[in-house]
Image (cartoon, rainbow, N blue to C red; front, side, top):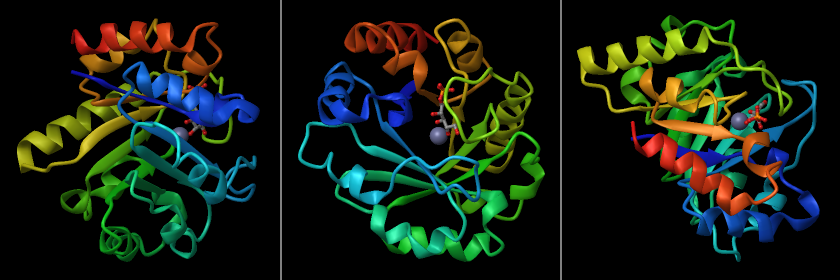
Length: 219
Ligand code: DX5
Ligand code: ZN
């Protein structure tokens, strides 16, 4: 049964609280928070103060995706009562094991994201430590890009490794997710689907979340 995490990168920032409350009330499982620094990825989005401005609104738990260099310096800024996951990039963390320990020490669940060119094998030594693995199905930096189908092979690999070794991470996919490919992604074994433009560019946000949820909870 798949879960949905709408990415606020594609929201109308001038109406952020209102829109996040709408998708949360419609039953989305997480709010995906895309943080970009203009160094690790070629785009700047927003920082912790924007995320924290949502704390007083009715929202689903936060799934924080840090597309930034030196994440250790900023991790604690993103911890609030509503933070469920903090996800760092494998490619941005030379001391990944320590970074994951730092996240856990703050009392939140830890995850690692893999760019399309980074293999699952690069996580071999930390898989047992992880609560979440995020498979990028676009090159990070922008919403509205086309889904890279090879990401589904990584999802299957991660599922097999979890079964064989008794790991407990959930598998998330991020980038180019639409109503047209959501069932295929769930069938590959994905647990959480991030959708930015496919949710926030819809005319009726609540109806779109409902459409996604009906589709992905069937599988
Ligand atoms: C890409 C971000 C994604 C993005 C997804 O760098 O990590 O979360 O917002 O947007 P869509 O769903 O429009 O591809
Ligand atoms: Zn993301």
